[in-house]
Image (cartoon, rainbow over all chains, first blue to last red; front, side):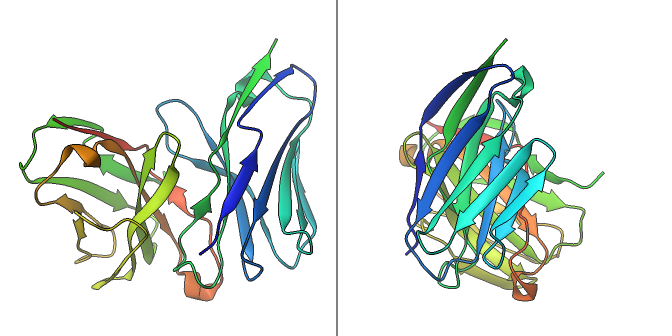
Length: 113
Length: 115
């Protein structure tokens, strides 16, 4: 089945700096890659997603890039703010996964003022 | 407001005492799913449902049951809970994946402790 690796597991940046989280996946047939943000006591919240026919997608301060050849995708957050502090999860879905989200282990992002 | 609602949010119970965690969504979504979240293991799918009366096993279905009698509800049933089912549980829903992969929307979680 699909295996998603996520790095780093923790990331600390200063307010205003950029943060980058990287994920790799194993199933070349995977075709949908969402990113979720999870705050304490809350469920994962979708922040951006990308499909396999697109190389990059941007939404204000958040962008995701996808390299299908290398089987990796990344989340970029620019001009970070303290409210960006949370755990971020990447995920992948492929035809063999039964529509299950295969999640990475998460990155705990801390933005310090 | 579009949402996925889980109840209860917290539950402490004892081994062997049957329990049900309810999940309801108001977005008319066909697809619903249950995940459990454990430290070091991330989120793993337990069961999913493509539509009413259609359910299937995910990666970790042992010890769990589900039903989908109505489109909006997808309860998770633990017939005889055991301590290894202590976890944080999430319900999610989306439009039918048969239309192409769809964003899944999550509830706020149910923290279960089985003593």
